[in-house]
Structures are given as structure tokens and as C-alpha cells.
Image (cartoon, rainbow, N blue to C red; front, side):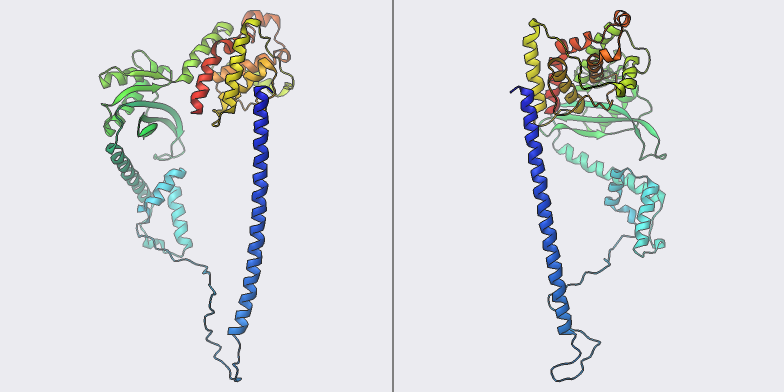
Length: 431
């Protein structure tokens, strides 16, 4: 039995076990429901009997009892329809309300309206409470400040001796500013260092004016100074965009100058591979000048018209058989790991098994959601693999092959040159 068949058998067994657990849980729920129904019926019968006993209008001597009074029945509990709550007059000073609103991404107007509706539903007089949009905003800002001070105090008690600084920017919807709903450039800054923070500690997520290296470096340095970490930074972790890795105005270079010492440059492994695969692609197909790769755009447009039942596979030469065995073992190990890799790595591993060796996959990786950017290493690899697998249906003519280069060399290059490095990335993402 091949390694991929073992994977399929293992996953089939896991699915069967999961189905058995679900069936057992459903049976337990049915038993609980039946027991609850029986208990409710018995309780109603006992209650009816108690009522007939304690509400008998005549006693043993035939004298009428006072019907205005009923002695409490022993063992009988009443569930009230209302619950009495106590809210402070300055209700928006409650830390739980402000924290929950931030966590849910609610605007100041939304929080004010929701709290007011809750108080009004409970019969409260809103005039007795200090509540308004401006009050909500001030208290939310104050709550964030106090919480951040608590985290900073706890962090300062046991700071890492050596730290690596991480930062990355992204356009996000502004839920805390004066104009909720708009998007702005946001920078996430964190540090990592053993033993207390091997997974990283978030320092802040400031909004910056632009994504230039200068703006990112200034925002990162401000947070380092606020947390008192300027003296323990030994490495910088970043992706290989020009704003980060520029020789003169890159954020990494500017941070190193402000720290006034040499630090390690740990460029993201994902983007390092992007440079390698991008160079191969440009050599075969030429440099892409448009925002979207025209090859990829065309492939996406015709994807629904392709038949994916019988993809074309590579013919492996004799001298590459040892490489094939190692690649097959590595990709099998990736798919069998307890902690599965990220979606794009997993799809690349599955396509690597399908393309050269006609293995069946436990799921269909050809049903792509096209969520991978053409600028990412996985995007180029996944597109080129599928373009080669369906080159015959795409009708790439000989002229196109001569002018632009056939889609076949890139999958070969990816397989023979980069698969070991990609395997390392998958292993890292599984840890």
C-alpha cells in the first residue's frame, strides 16, 4: 500500500469514527430528551396532586378554610419571569461593556443604542443614566488605556532577554476612529522571545498615514520605546516588500539605524520563495506589467469549462527517481501531520502528489477557491501546476509555446528545485 493510500485509509477511518461519535451523541441527546419529558410529566402529576391536597376547600370536620391563604407546598419551586439587576448610573463606565463592544467591532453609536435599548426594555428611565455617544467614546478610550497599562505592567515584570521584532501592514476597516467603516493602513507590531513569549506578544496596532518604510519604522520604534524594549531587540522579522527591505529607506534599515546596532534580518520564508519562483516565471513568461497576471486571469475565466477528471501528469526521467521518492515521502508526511498546514501549502502538497504520480487525493484540490494572490509563491506554483495539468484543454499552440514558453518547465522547476524548500515551509507551518 502506497503512502498516499495510507493517508486515504487513515482519513476514511477518522471519518467513520467521527460519524460513530456523532451517532452516539445523538442517541445520548434523545435519551436525555426522553428523560426530561418523563421528569416533566411526573412533576406535573405531583404538582396537581399537591394542589388538590393543599387547596382542599374543606377540612376533616367540614369547616370551610380561608381561601385567601394557601400554605406553601414543600419541595415546590417557582421560576420568576423577571430578574432584578443593578446598573450604575454611569453605565458606560462598565469595563465589560466597553471591552465586548471593542471585541465585536461595534461603533460608538451602535453601543449607545444597544445599551439604551437594553435599559429601556428593563423598564429603566433613561433620564436617570449618564449615557450618550460622546460618553461612550470617552469611556471606551479610557478602558483601552487602563487595560493596556495592565498588560504593560505584567509584561515588564518578566520581559524576554532577547527579542525579535515583527511588523506587517494591512488595510483594515476602522472601527475605533471618528469615521467608522472607512479603511486605513494599519500596522501590527509584536515581539517574540523565549521563554515567556515564544509565540509573540502584541505591542500595538497603530494606524499610519501611509505604508512607506519611514512610517512603519516610526510607528514600530514608538511602540518599542513605550514598552521599554529598545535595548533587547536582536532580530527583525519582515516580508520582502520594498517598503521593508529597501536598502536606503526600508523600514528594516531605518529601524537598525535608530537602534544603533547590527541586528539579524529574518525575511519571511514565504516571501523569500516568492523571489525565487518569480525569477523563474519571468525567465519563462516575461515580466508581468499589469496588476493581474494575464495568464492567471485567462485560466480563472475558463476554469469552469475544463474537465478535471483526467489531468496530465509529468513523465519522470530515470535520474530523478530518487528525488521523486523523497518528494513523495515529504508531501505524504505533510498531509499526515497531526496539525495540518495552511490551506495553500496543503493544496500544493496534494497537487504535487497528483501531478507526477497519478495518485488519488482524499479531497479534490482541483476545486480551487482562487484565494491565492499571483504575487505569492503558492499562487504562482498552484496556477502553473494546474495550467500544465490542463494544457491540452487550454489549447496552448506551438507559437505560444515558442514565444511565451510552455507551462511545462515551471512545474518541473518547482518540483525539482523548490519542493524541498517548500517542504521546509510546510513543516514550519505545522509546528
